[in-house]
Image (cartoon, rainbow, N blue to C red; front, side, top):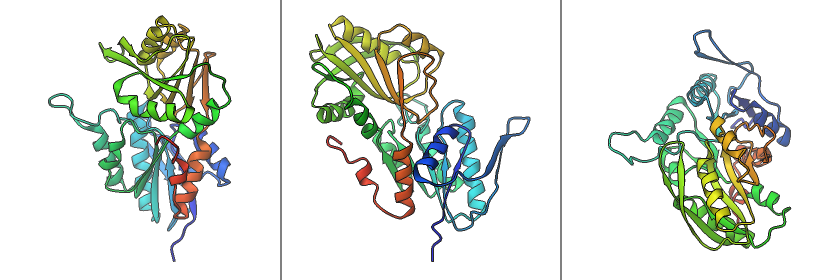
Length: 315
């Protein structure tokens, strides 16, 4: 008979989220030592019996990305060598996801490499949220449960009153997501055409759609420097937008982003706690995805479908 004891452990990248997940489903967070040697090498020791158990390891690959990725691989290896029955890598934010194709000569497909590393370490399945591109699921030779943050965003946005809402994608690649949001929210659809001039600088060129006198919601999966968002917000305001909000699943904000957000071009940045976010007094709203991930973990543990967690009109 299979032992379905549910065990949840956390790396150091987002322990607060792991604690919230455990609280939402009434499962204690597992005892594990996760630390570093003086030379920077990660050390992991699982301090309880997990032989035959269903183990979930929660770790977002946010900065320092390489350290947190390596830490997760070591935790998976530790669980495998402790004879866990099944190991699920719970990766709320999957780093390296934007390196998912060869768009230049002699560059790697790092999103595939990370998938290979997780499988090689001993992961039996992956639970993640809002991948940069859907096809990354195909990089894995193990099952992937891909959740969307959209139900959490929709619940929050339902509390807001908008005047002629327009959902805009800040680039061509996000049109499918924007169309889904527009469909659910009963809004019209728009797009900002952009040109990237460097890794941290973006220039908005034109707008597709009418935004004059409208409230605009920008939707995207990830932002680091807020370059795309602020450039889009600037041109939207120049075309008469009444307000500009942004709903972004993963905000891995750096100092450049905070400086840009201080400019006031974006009235509200709505994101999730998939990675730790410090609002710093700025209009940043952080929504809790712990109940969503917790319910998915419970359903995977009991071999139930997770479809109803992300099957929303428009997706």
